[in-house]
Image (cartoon, rainbow over the protein chains, first blue to last red):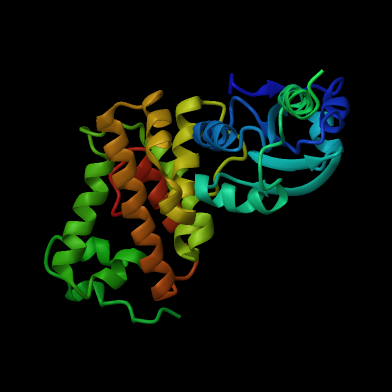
Length: 132
Length: 166
């Protein structure tokens, strides 16, 4: 799980609202066998959806009140948030394709353009069309 | 009532008579040679050459038994809510996945299993889960009734290593 950003009650709300890119949170615990089996699949999913979704994790053993507040009654549970609001969730271990099929309909169809790249292109076009 | 009646235990060949009183074996007894082989496999999994602790195998069996529909199998024991032992937790999760949809088990999950189990143990655990999944399906199809207290105790004794019919 080292690839995913760990969320806490202090940063969860800010993180889930901070970006227009949807956020998928893996609610897990180190003692949970199903969570361990699912970990490589979640990491693979994070790589596959890089740029289309941000991935984070919450250790429900460390923050049980947080899990309860968010309605997470069992683990592993993956929850997709957009602009701070829950969109969909999947509980229990699933295969890579099943998870992809579950989340893809709720994700942007293409990766958002990097703001720096957008700025570079804009300035380049401006220079080309209107040389100074 | 079972879909196929129990075979009369006293009509079984010598050496199998004791097994015929067990509800599960009592159905298999219609085919004595299958009953004999099935019982031998049950014993082999819990025998001295076993590599995966019996307690772990039994907890995995209890877990998968909850969802297959064999009332007899499920009544032999309820899985615990928590599994603090990492090896047991993985075995239980693995059994649950296999019984739910074995097609979701991929290479990465076997790599996770290897963090806790040797290849020898993985083979034993996988074979055990598959064997018991088949047994549970058989029990569900035959509509076995929940086990009596005596049958539950007999099975518990068998798991614990005491001589028993099952």
